[in-house]
Image (tube, rainbow, N blue to C red; front, side, top):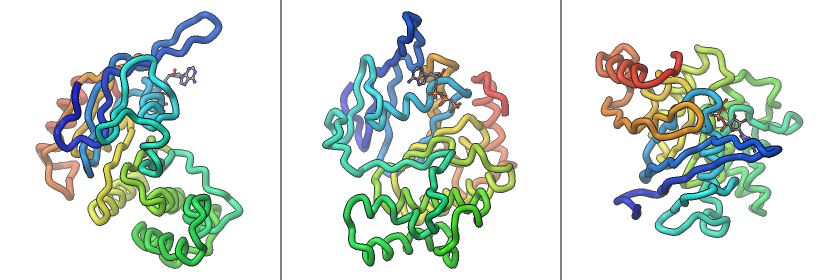
Length: 256
Ligand SMILES: Nc1ncnc2c1ncn2[C@@H]1O[C@H](COP(=O)(O)OP(=O)(O)OP(=O)(O)O)[C@@H](O)[C@H]1O
């Protein structure tokens, strides 16, 4: 399969089986899809279906057994991926002894940027995620949603072209989760990047995505790809929203 028009990333027929003590565990089977420039792509699948393994292959952290990943027309390697990717995790990995500013600056520091320049970049993204005034706070002084914002600011500060988010709101209470969904939409609309967002929540997928890649139970296969043709800001009560949610729900074993 060649590179499709406008595609940044092409996942071509990738499969992965883990072999442990002579038993084989097939986790990803023959998965193919494209990721387009600056789109908000959601990967939706049930728990343990292989979403993280798939993401890890897309980020060159795990080698697929077969198939390949094409980034901007070339097979993905450490060299050509450079600093193009940044990741936001469900469990954030914030340094508890470091302030918001120091946590956001971390990646820039690793790359040897000067402190003053790093602080300027970090401040831009601290402002973007709405944490102005909390620069000197420590993570334990922040709510779950605010910590998640720090994670997003840190990812953005590294200036990635592709932002990968692995169930970033999975640990948040429902109310905070809804407000973070609005926040991530606002941030992405203000500073567009290619986003690959993983979730097991259908409503979240329909609320956020330009497109949804629906995966099956393990081993993960692509069950369907949906274009979400609902203008933003979206409303969960919109008839088209409810219709799409039902169509996807009827096509999967996922519980809402
Ligand atoms: N390095 C590994 N060795 C062996 N098995 C693994 C390895 N990594 C993942 N697996 C298995 O692959 C399956 C899919 O795991 P994965 O973490 O990708 O699921 P997931 O869809 O991201 O789940 P969740 O929604 O809970 O995050 C699991 O059964 C897991 O135990």
